[in-house]
Length: 193
Image: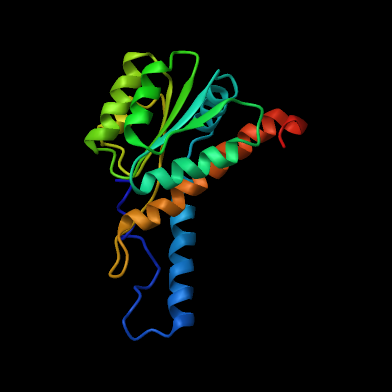
């Protein structure tokens, strides 16, 4: 299972008595391990397919709710630098309305840590009904959202005493955004700004 990082984790748990520098060290080591685990789950073909969907899309919209909205906004902000038409609606009903306007020539990037939020699944269903190609970023490969993805990326996350697994998932999801952006910027070369 993607999220069974605890079994192989070499990162130490933050303890109540840890000094600030120790907390920082453990936190950063945990982030590094999360990023390495996420990278190990990536497949070259998925990265190529995602890049191709993105660079050939008429419109790209980034969807995410709750904490995943931060990840979607980050992607939107990055992708404004490439010569593509990108969209992001942070308000759910606006995002849902936008999903009904998209079609097979567009691309949706749908981000959800759990992949089972009912509102996110309604967005995905709307996109599917319009035949919109979807790149899904989630932490759970068996989630309902994962089944909608034409291309899927899985973020490693691990629960700990002082932070929920969703916070580590945020780190790896932001890194997945970075990878998708860099692949797209590389494709456009000097046209990226």
